[in-house]
Length: 189
Image (cartoon, rainbow, N blue to C red; front, side):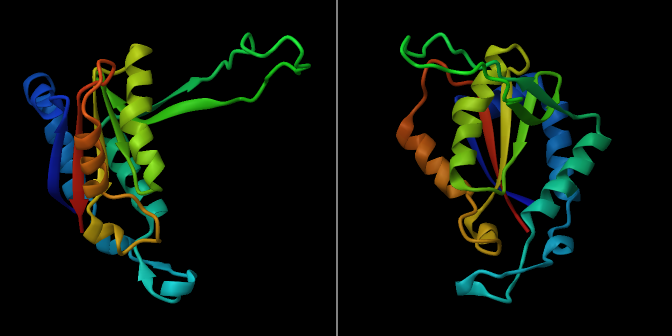
């Protein structure tokens, strides 16, 4: 795959180049190693594109996972202990034992990476919430969000998020005092 776009949110690219250049090189090398053509094997059952051969987000994610793990990157999962102290006193509740968790795809030397071929809301959540949470928990200082460009997303199931969307949103949203530096990488086949 190729890197076709980079968007530096809150100086993400600068921080990675200065403090984690070797990891940035690893990430770029991993992207280059994934051959998208091997994963254009999902036959669409959607009404508007029935029978069309699409890229499989599930298989692409597995390919990225294999490459990252081979380079020593690990996923990180944290349990969610949801508070009940905010329930109203008149609410009769049962104690929560949901087994809920948050997980970042890949973590190494305080850099977190998310690979997103899912729906739009997950892409925004990764950058604007999950990476901040993992920073506040002391696991990462900066993040990298890898997403397809629209050209690539158009060859997947409908609703897959893409680079141009998140860049537009982050540009219009601006930077908050809780945002961490994130590099958004747009990839194409």
